[in-house]
Image 1 (cartoon, rainbow, N blue to C red):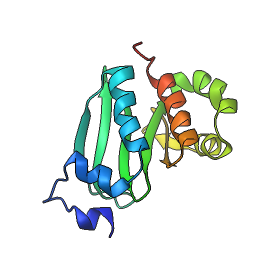
Image 2 (cartoon, helix red, strand yellow):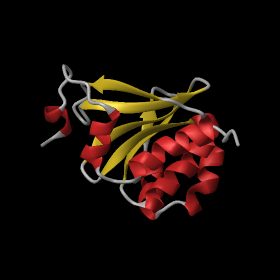
Image 3 (cartoon, rainbow, N blue to C red):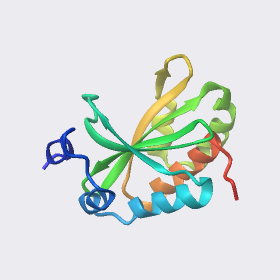
Image 4 (cartoon, helix red, strand yellow):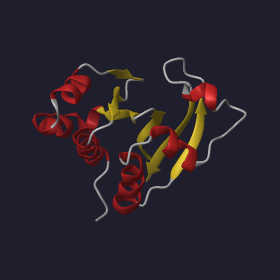
Length: 143
């Protein structure tokens, strides 16, 4: 069953229910990474966006949005914005990223004249590592 049907706006899921729906250990790894690296806490919000409707989880730290995460069966997608002022640093790590995520970044659209926005799926460790590299461009790790 689709996520937004299973959990409509009137039924906010518990984090355990999200983890069970995704059924991928990288979801827990995401929370561990955000806590250990940035001391960032999750915030659950409901989106009516036609592209990814339903409950999602956002992480922010020091006023910086690190990503919005959308639950999916077997994995999750992340929506990121990389500010144009970070373009040089982001482009420097592109050779380290998988071809799929590198292409996703290179083909990203303009987000309100602030930066590039893109969304990609995480279901494998290599995709999660790419996310962490991009996250490090947005905000330097605390440790």
